[in-house]
Image (tube, rainbow, N blue to C red; front, side):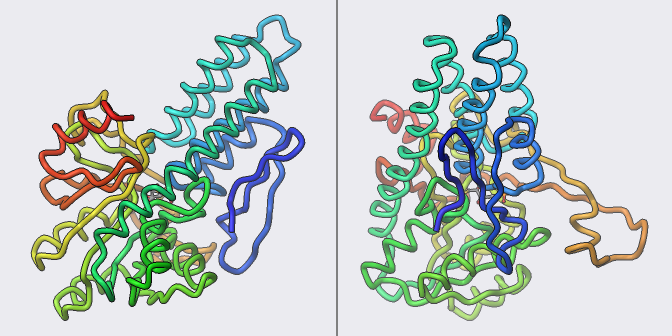
Amino acid sequence: MEAIRWDHGALYLLDQTRLPTTEYWLRYTEYRAVARAIRAMVVRGAPAIGITAGYAMVLAAQENACKEDFLAGMAQAKQMLADSRPTAVNLFWALERMEQCWLAHGPDLNKLEAEARAIHQEDIQMNTAIGSAGAELLPTGASILTHCNAGTLATGGYGTALGVIRTGCAQGKVSMVYAGETRPLLQGARLTAFELSRENIPVTLICDNMAGTLMSQGKIDLVIVGCDRMAANGDFANKIGTYSLAILARYHQIPFYTALPSSTIDMTIPDGGHIPVELRAGNEVASFAGVPTGPEGVQTWNPAFDVTPHELLTAVITEQGVLYPPFDRSLVQHFQKV
Ligand code: MRU
């Protein structure tokens, strides 16, 4: 399974808004449409939107290569993509990396395409390394709770939290994965349960509000989630509901992990209070698939992410290995190695 393809100068995205019922690929040759696709969550997940933005900048270069104001056109495209979603830092990280490339080489389409492909390939490699590092933490017969989708569909391939689960499964260590449905957009139900059952990884779908009861019955050994942006002290943003799970895990003394590539760490911000949290449209809460789930005109509040304080984290699983508290120190050491 994959979510992003680049072929003969065009970008292809698997439309994740239609999963799990329809597998439909969309073709993009124009960066503005890609920015709209990121906003509409045709493609989603922190590393995946970074990779997509990288390819979108190749599309922008194709459009601007012969223009006198190449740099202005590229800056405009970069800004439009940066405005698509605010929380996942991978988006900004990938745009910066692409910008270094066009500033160094100008409108060299081969160089830009190679850079976008490198961002994509490196993400897959980081995910497999995260999988190996994280699998070491799993007990035999592990029963794992995850939230949202941090799998192949959210990355260049293999996944971060689901990468750990994939590797653990290949090692025969995983007995069950519980996937929280992840209201309001149901990434856990539509994407994680789909991705895992495709590979015959044992998965049980639960509503988000069942996690506490599951833990109280001793059915969860550990929680692993992905991450959209980690601050320098280890506070991290992930899909709304992650914070509640971290508190539940602490109460029940269950290890709580996040898995992420270095491209998700933002050392420029000291703590989670500086992470911009995306607020999305209220109709995502008050309806689903066009069907109302609340009374007409009801007030809504729809933050797409929450911030989990680092005190609730047992460890951080990266492509370089596992980081332990104090995270302000282990994150600095991590970047000395990268
Ligand atoms: O709103 P989404 O679906 O883009 O949110 C995705 C998540 O919160 C993931 O857990 C996160 O991006 C990590 S993906 C490896």
